[in-house]
Image (cartoon, each protein chain N blue to C red):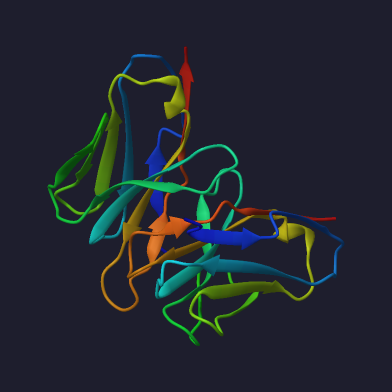
Length: 112
Length: 111
């Protein structure tokens, strides 16, 4: 089946630093989604990207849909302690039933 | 606003027992999904439904069954639980394909 490779798997950063994480696939996707999961909660949608090359921001978060449609990245600027959690990318494929495939997640720890 | 509600939130089963997880959504969404989350493996799709009365297999359907008799409910059943089914189960719904709304999860332990 389709696989999404997320990197890094985990990261420790100092409060105030910027963070970058990415997601790559061997398949083309029509839509890229970025979710955040707080401990003990379900994932919550952060940003949705619908066109190749699209760059979208949501507060301190910025995400881009790669030109090849096989990758996406998420940046967090000026991190704060509540940014702690697991970030998942997800891709929506084309054709037939449009199934959402999730990456394995990037676990972010912010050191105050 | 309830959104997506899962019950129960925690359950411990013995090997071979059966149980049903219930997911209810109040957003009038057509699509509903069941995922399992295991450490280091992200979210894997078990079964999904694109509308009332329809179900389909996802990536890891073996050992599970589902039913969508009402649009707002999606049930996940384990007929004979195995330790490999110890996991956190998430239900999600969406208006169309793509932007999923998740429940808070159901933590299942099979001894």
